Image (cartoon, rainbow, N blue to C red; front, side, top):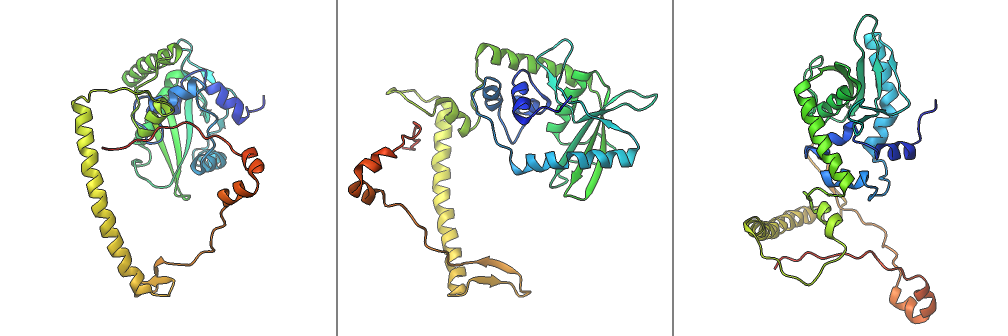
Length: 305
């Protein structure tokens, strides 16, 4: 059986909660939020392009898998299809692979790449970053396996292995949380926004002429925004003063170096940008100008009074 295309894989992910969804659902991800996962499952977000980290993780997955096999002598078997929990069908897993040692229980295999060792403990332990711990516990719950091997390549040269045993108590908590979230998805009940991007996605296209009385939390937030705005003005002024000193030192030169000759900063000329003179185009060719006018997306502007 051929592996699914990325589009097919993304479509299949909409039919349940996968391992990488768990940390965002619990509010423990730096990269995504509960509302974003909800919108993905509801088909309200278009296909998200791969970023560099995702792309290189995909490129290096076979390398990490081979390094694991070389170090352990165990073969990693790859499943080309998504699997589901036998009871809780909303829980799905796209495994990087599994290991079936002779005379030993099967193991989930998870391959990772990382830029730094932050969050990674001593090799051979179960001390891995929290989002990955939640991910593999989800996989263990789906498969019924009792241990996961996590192989990570850090900084392109530091290869490490970690062993994560099942945690039944944590798995029970995950099943409950994922069930509650999937019920939200099914009934169209979005989670509360937790970031500005969430708020814009939820309410950013239109507004109505109406007044809302601020509660204590909103009043405190407005005070904090005013304080941060004042501090930003101070920081901008300090930055401008420091920048002016450096520019004065540079004069017409384009690179500032330290006593060892290492570059500290540059101030280089760039080619003047070419811009379309829309007003002149409209005056000279109004029909052509109108032909290529395109309405933008409706939006709201946030102003602090």
